[in-house]
Amino acid sequence: MALTMSMPGRNKNKDAKDTATREARDWLLALTSGRATEHDAQAFRDWLRTDSRHQAAFAHQKQLWEGMGPAIQEVVAQGARSRARKPVFTGRRAFLGGALAASAAYLAFKPPLGLWPGVDTLGADYRTAAGEQRRVSLGNALDVDMNTLTRINVDHDAGGPVIELADGEAEIRSGATAAVVVAGKGRITARDATFNLRYIGGQARLCCLSGSLRLVHAQGVFDVVANRELRYDDTRVMPPVQVDPAVVTAWRQGWLVFNQQPLAQVVEELNRYRRGRLVLMNEQLGKRLVQARFSLAQVADAERLIRDAYGARVTHLPAGVVLLS
Image (cartoon, rainbow, N blue to C red):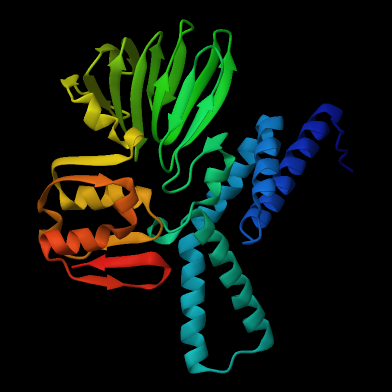
């Protein structure tokens, strides 16, 4: 008869991992129930910070749901086809009900058209909603002004706070103590400087407004001086170019400025500041160049401005979705 030796240390680690997995699954269900409150979101962030295993467990559960999304949708579609062919028994109905619930949880992570924030945004230390701007002061004369739909996380090393811009845009002011900011594959160091950093869809734009900055990237080390903007992604760094800082930071004064940009890009940017979604249905319309200055107070009425300026046909749908054709 074979004997299995118990390893106390290993069992203890396994129990802790199992507990983290179980709690992560509980948080997943709670946050996708549709009844989660801001208090729940704060409790979730606290839970994430207490143990690195919590972060790993939740990331794994999230990955499982994302991977199941297409399969869940196919199950629901098959169920609909089956109901058209034959009666549905109670067990089958219960199974489809579970599949629909799972599909709802999947949508919490992958909201269609970005109509609501995904559950994964709740884990950020600081975040802003559509149209919201806020200031975060981190001490040592380090201030961060967050633009709409922005997420940042704050950690600390021996030199002080390390800011991660996970998504969105922020203006950052550093004092005599060096500020360290990470966005994607870039690590920015600044002292007695002000800069605007935008990181959306894996694309970063780093604009120095005063002082000087240093970017460390896999492609090398780059210095950026005032009124210069440098763009990078995970694999490339573009040479710095001259920019108008007033245009880059217009959002801080409540404006959006577009200089000969395709309407498709303008609509994409406007969507970051409003509830609902503008959807371009006409490819040629999207190529029209825009020279405009929008007040953020006008963004909610952007479809009317586009209709009047470009003759677009406007169709309003539920949930704030507006078709432009």
